[in-house]
Image (cartoon, rainbow over all chains, first blue to last red):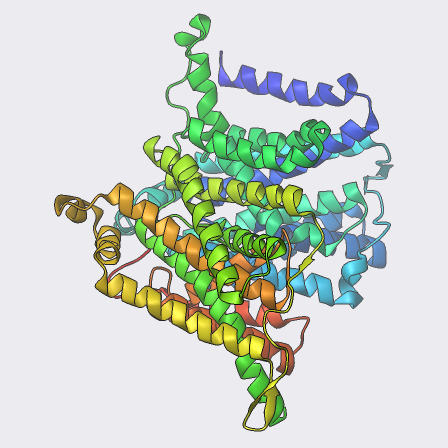
Length: 326
Length: 294
C-alpha cells in the first residue's frame, strides 16, 4: 500500500471516530488523546530526531495553556490570536534554555526537569496571573471566524485539524535540510560539526519548534478542559510525554501519535482493574520497552512480516530508531 | 537571621543533605556501571522506609536494627528489579533510552504496589530517640537531626572504604571504568552490575529510614525526593562519588537556607536555578573527572 493511501485512510478513521462513538465522554477522551499526540510529536523532534533528552515539555505546555486562558478570559482576545500567542510565548520562553542545550544528554535531562519545576512553582505561587492552586475556572470556549465551537465533537475536530497540521509540518521538516542536519547531529555530533552544521543553533531551533508545538497544545488543552490547575503541568507531565514517544517508537512520527493514544486510552481501559490500574500500566510500559527496539512503530512491521500478503510490500526503510547519545 | 536559626539551618540542611547524598550515591554508581538514569531510586528509598516501619510494628526494635531492616529491604527490592527487569532488558539489547523509560515504569509499579500494601495515608514513624533537645553552643538542637548527620557520614565513609579496600568494591570500580578490560582480568561484569544495584538499594533503604524518622513514610515519598537526589548528583557531576556526596549536602543546605531566607514557596526553585547556573559554568558538574562524559 502506498503511504499516502495509508495516511488518507488513517485521517478518515480519525474524522469518523466521533461519528462512530457518539458518547461525549469518549469524544472528550479522544480530544485529550490528540492533544497528547501533538505534545508527543513535538518531543519526537527533540528526542527522536535530534537525540536531545528533554524533560521540560510540560513547562511549555503549561505556559501555552495559561497564556491562552488568561488572554481570552481576562483580556477578551479572540481564540485564534490567543492560540498563536500561546505558541509564540512558549517558543520565546524556550530561549531561556539556549545556554543549556550544549550539555551532555543526561545533564540536559536533569536541567530541563529543573526548568519544569521552576515554571511549575511560578504557576503555583503567582496567584495574580494563574489563580494559584485553586486553578483557573471557566476558560471560554473557542470560536474561530465567528463560529462558536460548543460541542465536544466541534472541539475534537479543531484539535484534529491542529494535530494534522503539526504532523504534516513536522513530516516536511524531517525530510528537509533541517531534518537531515538533526539526524546527523544525533548520530555523530563531531562529524556533523565537521560538515559545517552549527550544533548549538540547530539544537536551539529544535527546542524552539518543540516549545511552540507544546504551547499550542497547551492552548487547545485550556479551551478543551476549560479548567487549569498547575498540577497538570508538573514534571510528571513531561515524563508522560516522554513515555508516549518511547512507547510509540523513537524517531517515528506515526509512532508518536500511536504512543500518545495508547498512553491516554490505556488508563481508561484499565479502569475496571481498580487499584491495580497503575501497576498494570507500569508493567505494560516495562514490557513494551522490552519487546521491541523501536516501540510500537517498530513492532508493527515486525508483526506484519508474519502476514503473507504484507511480506512483499512491508516497507523496510521505515524510519530507524535513533539511540539517544550519551 | 539569628544565630540560632543559622545553627538550626546548618544541622537541618546537613541532615536532609545526607539523605539526598545517600540516594544520589546510588544513582551515581548505577550510572557509572550501566549508564542507566535510575528514576526508581526514590522508590527504593520508600521501600526501605516502609520495610523499617513494618519491622517496627511487629516488634519493638532499637533504631539501629530498624535501619538495618530498611537497608536490607532496599537492597532486596533493588536486586529483584535488576535481576527480573533490567538484566532481561540488557540481554534483549534494547537501546539505553528504553531501559531508562522502564525505570519510570518500575517506579510506577513500586509506588502503587506500596499503596496497595501500606495504604495511601502518610504513616507516622514512632519516635526513635529520646526527644529532649541537645545543647550545642547554647542552642537546642533535635537529636534526631544529629543522629541522621552522624549515621549519614558513617555510611558514606563506609562506602568509600568498601570501594577502596575490598576486593568486590575494587572489582566494581574496575568494571564501571572499563567493562571489557575488567572482563579480561577475570571480573564477572554481570555479577558486579548486580552488586552495584544491591549497594545502591542498601544506601537508598538507609536514606528511607532516616527520612521517614524525620517526617512521615508514605507511598509517594520517593519520587520527588529521588528527582531532587538526581539534581544533587548532577550538581556534583553525574558519575562522580565525591560529586554525589558533596552535591547532596550542598543541595540540602541550599534548600533549607533558601526556605528560611528567600521564600518557602520557591525553595525548590532556588536549588534548580543553582543547578542550571552551575551546569552553565561547569557543564559536567563540579567534581567530574576530566575526560569522562556520562
